Image (cartoon, rainbow, N blue to C red; front, side, top):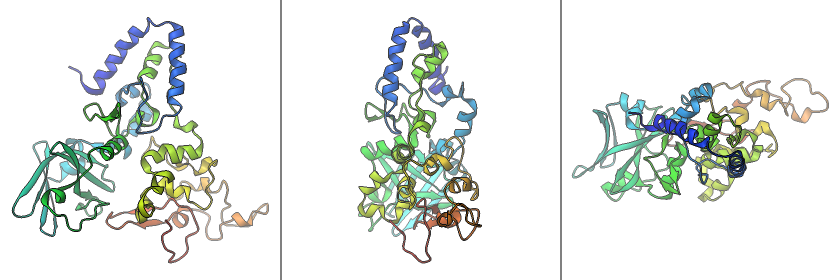
Length: 380
């Protein structure tokens, strides 16, 4: 018996047969309506009257891009405990903080999150693992009907547990608060809709219908009608949203920034998020000295292919820099002000420095492109 994405795709094929009964005028009407609805699509959003079908269905036509994307960090941004390489390879992880002892134990296809103060013990099964663990992985459990984020997370740099980034404990007043932070409601909707796909239905969190990870439709929008039109080979109503067509500023700040935090989101944070805003790349990019809202070489996708994993190649993006800035050497055409006096390659090593975020056990690349002065304070 088929289930999950495969079953949905089989259903689509059945729907396609029924759709043959639709008139061409009805299909044309559908096309116009879809184009209008999809034109403003952003990650984390729904499109009225549209349904998500899953990456398995997308792969039937887009095997290469779908296959490579599923291997990326975004493709593994949300996992069940049984799919988490960290949990499956670490049968027992422990952490001690003040009077609280933390333990994550994986056994017989279940991972259990436990905290004790020596008198009482808090214990719940882990429901989801957030993050692919290239940097870290955080765990979510349910308690008393609400979703909680674990107070401790796994960090690859130390191959163990430490406080979850962003948590400030002074110290926790009781065992329940020491165990986790209540994220039920809007925060849970935001977390799951950024780390998963199709997590919301009519504004409500529907974990039973969600696809794990950031899959094709998280960025291209719901694909049911697109798939039906392709199966019918009518060409009518076959449009799928393509973020590549967005203006550079819209792409970075509104589209990628919907999850990676653009300037509008950070502006609402106390102290602009402090040094933690180094994690919010669209915001940092917006504040670059040479920021140009119309320049495609300063958009997120100029350096990052969302269908591929992050490339650790410091010289790989130099061509985006040299569109406007000459490499080291004799100035040409009166462009001395744009010439780098230091070096001719690996621009990001100087102009996008690594910033160590306290408690994160990781150095983040600062996307605020600038001339970095020795001992200068971190620019918010």
